[in-house]
Amino acid sequence: MTVFEHAGKLLIVDCGVLFPEETQPGIDVILPDFTAIRDRLDDVVALVLTHGHEDHIGGVPYLLKERADIPVIGSELTLAFLTAKLKEHRIKPRTVHVEAGDTHRAGPFGLEFVAVNHSIPDGLAVAIRTAAGMVLHTGDFKMDQFPLDDRITDLRHFARLGEEGVDLFLTDSTNAEVPGFTMSERDLTPAIENVFATAPRRVIVSSFASHVHRIQQVLDAAHAGGRKVAFVGRSMVRNMKIARDLGYLTIPRGLLVDFKKLESVPDDKVTLICTGSQGEPMAALARMANDDHEIKLADGDTVLLASSLIPGNENAIYSIINKLIDLGARVVHKGNAKVHVSGHASAGELVYCYNIVRPRNVMPVHGESKHLHANADLARRTGVPDDHIVVARDGVAVDLLDGKITVAGQVPASLVYVEGTSVGRATEPILDERRTLRDGGVITVLAIVDPTTNTLTEPLEFLTRGFVHDPDTLTGVTDAVNKALEAPKTRAISDLTALETVISEAVARYLRRRYRRPPAVIAVVVDD
Ligand SMILES: [Zn+2]
Image (cartoon, helix red, strand yellow):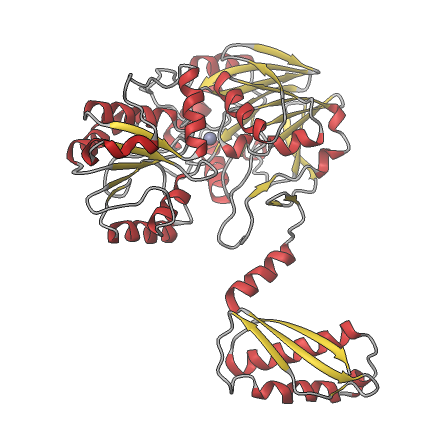
């Protein structure tokens, strides 16, 4: 989510979510922090969406819950995916449909949209003109020269904007570390066709529910192999219906079958295309690997992983692949066949863009620190002066003034956690507690004390969950607690909560020192 401010008005570009990592147990999605604009929502003139991926539109329901009538500007497919998502939140957005080449005025911002190619159809870059200068924001993009829909990133348009003078270029950094050029989607066709030609029984394809072109390739290969296809998973069924209705997906007649009616089709004529609950593929595969999915894997099935192995999660993914193999499946993934290419421009493409646009200032966006810095380095190598490049972390405010960018300040930008219906309630200390519970289990200590002396009047009682122990493990705890209670400072405590803290700390200290194990300890003190 990026916010532009000019003449007292705000323009928002994208509003996505992050998905939690293993270190964030219990979290469904992570939202951008709206704190900095919450008091100024009436100043927002529009929200521009560059494309329909979750990390660019997933936060929109939560933003519109704060102000429902913000005009949302985007391409046809982006708005269709968004509208379907908002329907589940019972929100009807005010949408403005634009296409590549269109211009649109939103308050003091003059907008112009440019076609870009990405791993979802209908992506747009946006040029933003104000009296302070022109900004070009690429959104996510790559430069596939042979995309399935023949809609390439419009470099001639980029060049025209460059001639006019791009004062600030915000560009996708995701693949800035990858040398060369991202391979064309079309180059995957032979490997995908080969999977279908050689699969002895069912083919189960897992993909992002938004990767319309990849799914088109799978449909075509399945059709050529005389197979039937069923979509599995709510977001996959929903998105593919939208993509088909709007003409982004072509499904030959008779190819599609309802999942429940597949029983009458022989296994070697079956294709299942599935995704996870948030549209991401790995969740569905993890459930299949654990036999907790409506698709039950069997000997001789082929699993085609037509998506990225999400970086940072490699170990989790390889363990899923191993389980799928143990269940008898053959697993085809980007590690053993050319069945996936990235949706983002590699270093070679980014350098072309810098040389075509010739921006005065550069701010790399989309990616972690290493990607942003790699992208900054590419800009530097094409001749952008060092003091005209800003690598900004979340929340950094950047001024564009007299053709030069400078870091101007910082606004609050923490991670806002969503779990179930609660938004922003889970905090870092809460996640700390969850990690402790997960790693060490929990011990509850019940202490009955004499309120006049703060000494134990009954033996301690223990209740444990996830903490492994035998009868002797906890015997030393009583001594440790007695010692803590004997301290003169402790004897004077009259507050029960303070006494509980003394006891829980004594128990935790003892277990850490004696067994090198740190469970969560909860002490409950009852006056005798
Ligand atoms: Zn994207």
